[in-house]
Length: 229
Ligand SMILES: [Zn+2]
Figure 1: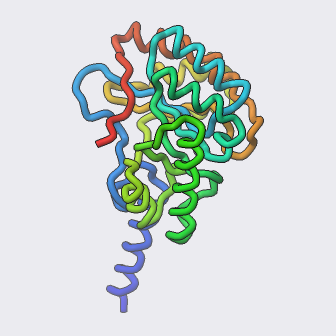
Figure 2: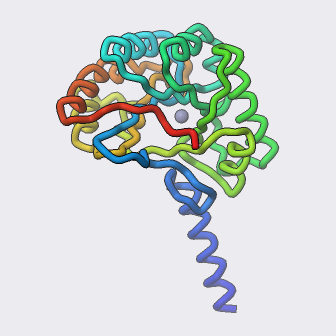
């Protein structure tokens, strides 16, 4: 009896770890840092596109000649498809962030498959590109989220460093947190959109981006998009 309870507690603890820890391997493999050697980093954006922030972010990336990864939200792609097309045209990597941005860790497999498929369809409609990488909203997964993404040809991606740019602490603070936290191989999480408010304000992130890129470059970083296999 005690053993059974202990086992149950252990299973529950593992499940919690797999759900809440974005980089946990318990629910399947997730890429949380770049595998290559050297002072490399990836800049990733979630929850866009956003009609005000995304164009500024694309402008900054172009000015600095950096390729980034956008984990696009399907319902925002349907609303602003020209921005998703622009991402692809300017050489950025498109990733799937699902369609609705509901937390997936308590959703049944049918819901997850539908949300991921619908998200990828919206990205492809907008850009002609089928995403090969996927990031779960908030990183929350269940035993089947990564398996379903994989069956759709999408590698599950976590992140190394989040700087809470979505809480809008000020552009300078976003820069400071980023430069302090980045290491060789880090995958940086930023937000060009708001997963819950299509018109949410992400201008601080856009404002911070040039100084982030320049600051990381001055520390010897090179930027890469995410490996798909
Ligand atoms: Zn999100």
